[in-house]
Length: 251
Image (cartoon, rainbow, N blue to C red; front, side, top):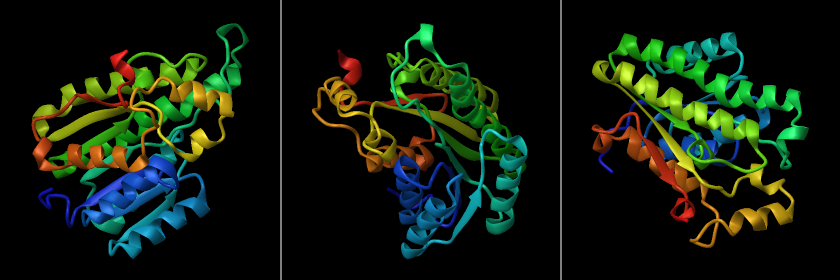
């Protein structure tokens, strides 16, 4: 890709492991300075060391994205360290470990998933947009899910939250399109991450059967899509939900 990302600043939430780490490293490979946010301090510090090994400047900020003050502090720390916020990827999220029926849905689990996966994205976008308005531009990419366009059986809160992320993305993209802020979502099917690794084998096999390509996605494949959405090659793309699903939605 042309080096439009080089020398700019990227923020990635939930970047301690999995998709978030892959996105942070992809930004580093493109020559951006990278702010890494996560609730897991050790994982976050591991990621910034990997970013630095690629020759890019890195900052770690411990942040619970469901807390507005922590998100605000994250944005302020990023701008203080790098001088700008050009790209933001809102990736932080959680999932229920086991399928649940609606009749047995745990209310506390519902609240937690909605707080992190939906409210967290809203809070991040709120503060990212404020900064990008001061700069007259920027690109935001939200990591949603194929469950945000259809459903994931047994994952009511996750499905509801990801539908909400898609809706937030479209609404914000419409509002800020004319001021140079592009906002898109990526909707992957199942990706082979530590989150998937804790699933029981029977659940993994059930999920794998839904992918005609015969495998799960790779974190690096999601990261590549984020790089395209941030690059000027996608300058005409905003308000979109980009599907990466190994053919799962072709059923």
